[in-house]
Image (cartoon, rainbow, N blue to C red; front, side, top):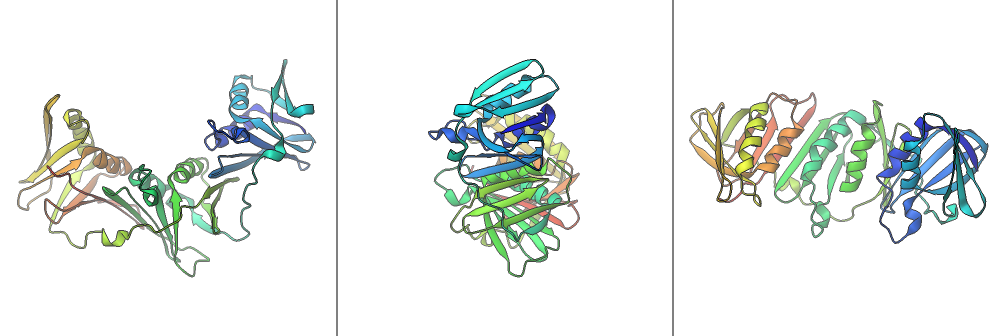
Length: 372
C-alpha cells in the first residue's frame, strides 16, 4: 500500500474514529485503525472496540492499493504535529509504515491487517430518518440513560419508529425522558422498537454534528445497529432484552400546574445547589401565591434560598428534587423561554415540559421526588 493524502483530510477522518478505538485492551489489534486504499483513489479508515465501529473515507492519491493496520492514537498524535502539507504513507516489510511529509520521515511499527476484526456490512435496505429530529431526540434523551452496570436494560434508550412518527425514551429509574416527533417515515409498515446503547448514542450525537445533511440512514439485523450519515457508518451491538413499560410510568392526570421561566430557574438553581447536600443534591421547591421558592441546606455548607415570580394559583405545595435532574432538563430546553411543571400532589412525580415546543415535537421529563 502506498498513498498520498492531505494532512487536513487525514486528521479529520482519524479524529472521527478515535472515540471507538479501544485504547486499554488485551487485544492489541483493537488499538489500531484499518486503512484500506482502493484503486479508485479513495481511502477507507475503520476503528472498532468490538461493541461498535466507525468507518469513514476520504479521497487520496493511491499509488499502490492495499490494507494496513496502524496504531490509532500514535498516528493521530503524530499527524497533528506535522505542518500543513501532503503526507505519503507506505507499507513496508514486516508491517512497518513509512510516513513522509515535507522533510519529515518517520517509520511506525504496525500490525498485520489480516488480524483486524471483520466489520458488519451495511444492509441493502435502510430507513431514511430526518437527521435534525434524530439529533434533537438523542440530545434530549441522553441525560436519563442509566450508568449502573446492574441495570443493563436501562443503559440505553428505546428508539420507536412508526410510519408517521419517531420517539425516544430513556430512564434511570429516578427520571424518564420522552421525546416524540411527528414525521412521515417511508418503508415502515410495523412499529419498530430498538434499544440503542449509551455508547452508540454518544457516537451518534457526535456523528450527527458533523454535517447538515437532511437524512440519516438506519438499519438493523439480529445483532447489529447501523447508522450512515455524511459518508460515515457507525455500527453498534444491540442491547437485548425488554425495556421497562414506560407507558405505565407516564402520569395520566395532573391537578397542579405552574409556569416557570427557563433562564431564571437555571440561574437561581445554579446558585442554590452550591449549598445542597453533596451526596443527595436535594433542593426544595415551594410553590405558593405566584411564587416559586427554591431552598437548599447542608450542615457543612450552610443554606440558600431564591424566590422567582411564577404563574401559580393553586394551594401551596412543597416538593424536593435532585437538582442535577432538573438542571439536565433545563439544559435540554435552554432555547425555550418558559416551561410547565405539573403535579398530582407533593408525593408524586413531577412532569416538566417546554411551553414553546418545536413544531411537531413533544418533549417531557418525569422526575421522581426526593423523600425529605
